[in-house]
Image (cartoon, rainbow over all chains, first blue to last red):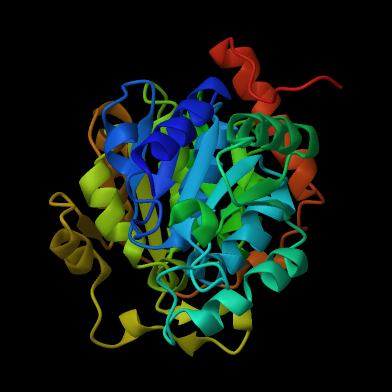
Length: 168
Length: 199
């Protein structure tokens, strides 16, 4: 990912009001982590499983934090139980920032990722999580702002899914 | 030691603390003993501790108490490592370890009925002060210290299997209703808006 896109993404999160990010590190969007860590307006919460990225994020959101959850797309499968049993059942606004490994546009795609990637969009639909596929930085700031407004309006998780066109 | 007796000691001590419950019997028992608006009756397996960690991080000046169970903690063991490293000083975790999956009604044993020691696992994860209590007197002593001290507490309460909750009328509080009650209570007492957006 170009450094400028990482800055736009992190700046967009900040200007949209996000102030706490739970995350399990991955490769495609990883340049955002040093930027998030270097900005004191973000509380950064490293976790050991995307499942708890959701439960911890949900608790923080109910406490008044504006929460993003940064994960690789395979984290959607790991966290599907907590997305349903906590985030959807209680209705908790959360912004999922998802790196779309294994998409057709994933420029580092291989046999490890391709099958996992093929389930991403059907999985989000099955979880009834509205999402936006992000292919470029052109409307990124507006897309983040729209997604955060939407998650508050719905009081539910929404997802921004970044393809290989964006992440490189 | 019976879980319901422990909860009966805890209930009158709640003032402005937040209480997050795990599933099954303890949720039913706690809801019958306390109708405090600071209760969040999570009620699904492997989720209460994570939610409690998030609340404790989001409200660092507020004491958060999580009522967990052995089966539920075993389902989300990664919580122990994350909790140890975050080390929220305002979080108290009470794990009522009855060594069975009592919600199944056939009381299948959990791993703690065998070789597994949750307090030792928590210490291994880095929660150095994790401890085990086996009688009401020690429970009361540990609970009093936990409520009064600014320090992460992880207390495994070894309890007998009990079916007391089966005689208790279950709360009819819907999860959404519980959420709004809880959030509005926090908005009043913390003096800040939580749910944003125009109605």
